[in-house]
Length: 597
Image 1 (cartoon, rainbow, N blue to C red):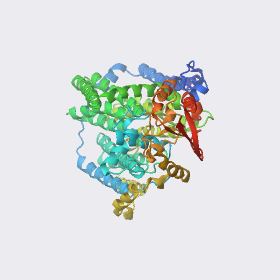
Image 2 (image 1 turned 60 degrees about the vertical axis):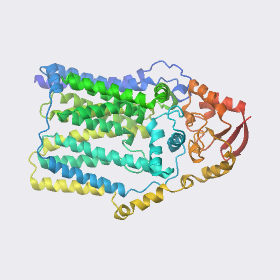
Image 3 (image 1 turned 30 degrees about the vertical axis):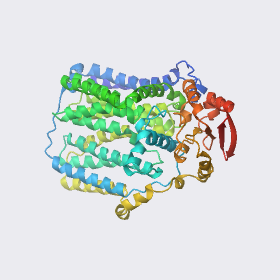
Image 4 (image 1 turned 45 degrees about the vertical axis):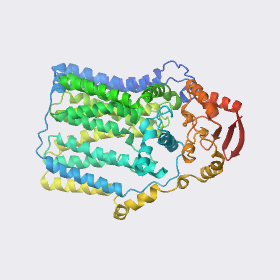
């Protein structure tokens, strides 16, 4: 009776905590401080920190109630937590070879799917793809990184990715830049399969159940992404550093010789920041959690080694980048400080009829469930310790990764944040079912189930024999397609109209969201602000104006001129400078040509 009464009291307080967190959503409303940036937040006098605090409060309050419940109902509360953290479980699986066969077979399937890929032929997104292509072309031709481009996502994502492939193939094209993203998607799928293989080995299941676990979760994980580049997946390949860190953490748990894994984790500290500052921030927070875990688990030598390697990694980054390192620090500081106000959207209230509220609510609730499961795992001895630690780490990744959606709360970004929570619950629930509800699974039934899952996996991926054998020819044709092929008629007409006029100009400045034109015209931006919409703060606009005298030719307007807010409103200081110092000479469609007076 006492136990039932405790559970009832907990249930009541837990429901109250959810209701309280819901009602506090609107009550958390920090005073707005005008950052002099035109955007959704400033127009609505809304403090960007509200979204973060509301999200964290909604997670922390119910979790705190659950922790308090555990504190009063669990004997030796702190001892169990301490023992859980310190206990180091060794991988004693003697079925590595058989599991390895399945792992290698799935890699082969992934490779054949990659060879079957249909190369994307859609017209170029002059805004998003232009962001990457123009920065990459400037690096390719001038060798400048942050000093030459105001990087809003990450220097690898914007400047290095496409240029590396252009160098490898000794050719510049939109098709080759897109092929780079296909490579990243393939790599992401391979990393998924590797992670599932590693976590499967930690399970205390017989071989037949391990095979079912491996195949089932491979289906779930791989289905989260596809090779259709324009569509928004449940998870983005930009999470590659996070999944690599997850794999390294899994290896760190079960291996005795860990120096190489600690070194790899330390390299991820700067590398993830160069890959993308948003993912880099989360990755470094997770690395800090790994450091604290090693420290608390009495693995002090490994924790000190990790700290030392991180310092060395950053020091070598500083030495290698030279002056660019200071530009990196300045650029990253401005992005963290300003970008929420530049492109932020107010997050929809959960359980409301706000746009995208259903999608946001579903994701946040799933994250909360994962966190509650993780808290309970500290006190559950029936699960493998390493498996429990991986689930806890994945839950933290899920909670942290939703911060991307808080930065820009549209449907696509919220959808991107659903992948990690779904992965976490898939791993945990499938293990529970196999361990608890399929205890007496016969060999025949397990073979049938494994076979059905394997067939479903194969049919769930695209395999085309004709495309596989013609991959090399198809790729060659694709990467050598002229850039005009990917432009719409209006963009193509503008390029043909402008090219003869630009022979005597060393650079071209955009005052347009069509960032693609620096690339297709093969003329670098005269300022570092090729992605002009991002220069919305007064500080950046004044820097923009300082660099503008180098620009003799400006392309303004365009099809995406009114995206978000019109540029003459968004970056009005720059617009006023252009009107005062440049003359409108010609127009074509929605584009205007300005020449310096």
